[in-house]
Image 1 (cartoon, chains in turn brown, cyan):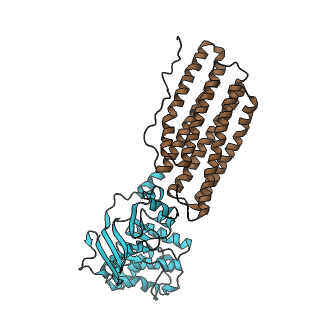
Image 2: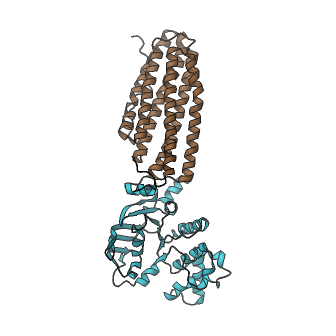
Image 3: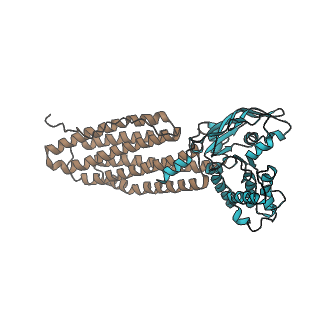
Length: 238
Length: 266
């Protein structure tokens, strides 16, 4: 790690904002897991807890932005310090969005708990959520360690989540074609799957911030994607 | 499109070299103060020299107008050219050189003479003015360029030492530019000034850039970031890194530069 600043209060300020980001990351990871769990187990109390918990995540983001503004004004950070502050702000924004997705998942799980389940789709959602939370965790660990290799790995592996989303998409289409009464539940489940896939994209953008923080440049290469925009035909007529 | 304008303003890559230094070494007696410095200073650009005390930045600045000639123990080797001409060539008159490469010091040091005489002194001894009218014109235009004219035009006969610190420093800048130099060297020109006077001098430096090449030594990193387009970082007599100011302050290449500008023990 870097040598300390001569002015130790500067180090304390930088450590404080980074600690906030980590706390925020922890809350977001838990919210996503809880929301997916609530969906799978039809646990309404847990879903409500997730919905309530989003306020704390939003408040942390606000606090991070405020602290970063103070840091910029009072400490005039440069070079790696400046990139730390900028990346903290971007990561906090990404995490705030992920918190919103968790809240939305919880909300939809409450609606879905009154509908009949569609095969193993909610179990697939839970699997997908666990994978994505793992990516998020890895991205944040890479951030703390300034580990470019791990960050690159997170970027590369986002396509696994994309693939999970694609097969989910097909499965849901199949359910809808089999019985139009499934459409309402399938639409909710599709939004959930799409939102979890978006969380994966945010994990990727956090990983990119790690690379920016460590190297001073955003990764230039196009990252691998498996998300299909066309040709996602249902596996009908099997 | 303001951002684009800013980028264009910062872009000095198209400008010509004004001063080129190759393998410059300075010894003060036994002490090796400057080690093998290569640098190209661009025309119509503000170049900032930063680095901790004793790093060689002022020593190098003083090589650029042969001020080190006045230090008995100093030995300068290597090559420094101004517009392609070797300034250490024995045929070069250091006094003439210093008219072309002016200097402003840390503490304002006006002569204990009138404001007018302070500015008129250089042009007079270099014979740059034929007659009183021409000299008056030089004094006026220099004071205007130094953004001091409006404050002193009614009391040009008053003593230069009676001005405020910030005004005295601008008077010294007016005195330095009165001989129509091509390069202006400034050794911590704002360290004795309050923030308002500092801002005025910085604004002046930015204006002077359209006519001169300005080289400024500063201990204030903020000042280097504010006024310069190119920044050179010196450490223990070495030129560690030299680059576009924005690059130096956002993504320095050398860890020593980063440690210094971010205020770490390096």
